Length: 278
Image (tube, rainbow, N blue to C red; front, top):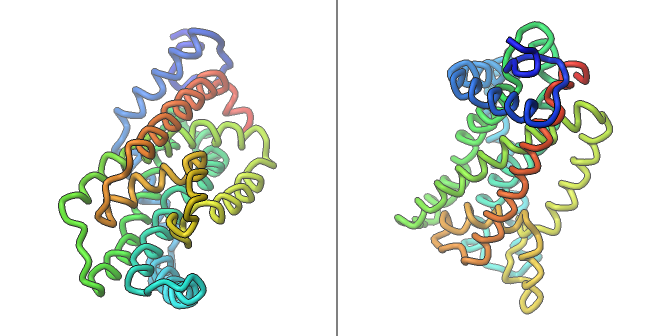
């Protein structure tokens, strides 16, 4: 097979050839989804090897942080704890384990898999799916925190919560794109991960995670220019019993389409060099 068309070939390729190679890489990754799931699960087991509670330490720390932040911020914002705590618990979980967590881990998607990339010829996109599986497992046992808060206060969003499922699928596609884009960029430029971390800290404070959008009052119009708000809201709103506005949904879809397009273009252009960068 020609090296430029090889799915797992490490030689640089250009133009339509590199695009075909990138698509072949993605196709082969789909065929190897069981391996990606196994690697993601193995990562969790190795990360918490020897620990008594394992990944549930994250759940426990989330409970402690939620309890302390909930009481303090409810007083600072002069809001009722019964209304604020469900919002805060859900927002923190979606942000920490969902949006920010995937973006930060996508930066080390390929550098963390350096040995595998050098030792075994596998499609590069497989490492991206591995990161998604790993984060999905962590998300699954952290979502029990807001569910517990909902149960304590007797809240139930009803069937409208099902609208969050397609939104979570969109998050998965964005997470895949983040791994393909940030993973390759951070493999080449090793100063990028701390920059991404710093930007996410800023995004955390300007996005309604610990504060509610309604607290901005008449100034809330600018939130639509914050893509993190729209991406967060399409999952959070249905789980809180609300339908996301058409404006929020449109922005989230538009941002995702552009982001995925840029990620695929970047991945197709540089995937042939990844083995030399890690």
